[in-house]
Length: 251
Image (cartoon, rainbow, N blue to C red):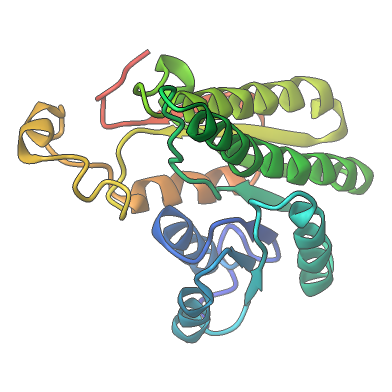
């Protein structure tokens, strides 16, 4: 059933990458609830994106693109603009925890290439197009999904992932500083462990007991934050990094 269109995001046109499942799907649900028109980007899981459309009804537009491929971001942006008639906010959520073990040079090289393309370059390409369009139309919001790894680094097998997320964090800050005068707002969300498929098997009972809240962050917490930021109601928060780790990592 279609949601109320009188919410804080009524009339806002938003592109969410990686929106078919996990954190992205939670964000789509929150945006839709608050009245936004949403393009739901998906990679391989077209069925999950289609299910969101069935569940939520109108104002949801699934669009597929393999952001692991160079040039895909440009095509996604163009199609999203066509579907929505313009874009007011970008939520660059798509990403993956891709390994880059250093013992084998082929795995190392492949891991770096994949991490930089999916976790950094594709988001950077979308941010570039967002800045150009938002600047021309008088403003817009960019929310990037980084990671606590951007601050503290990641484990031995995921060095490239942490580096890519750090690059995305720096990009977000730079956009906020360079283009704020054009009305372009940019925020970074840096989660720790989130209750999605990625965390299954990675956080055992012993690790869970060490978390201050004794639980992994629910995707809904991140979704509510993303929806608020997309509303443009926190203009002077632009450039900020918002850690969502349940105090597991505190700077």
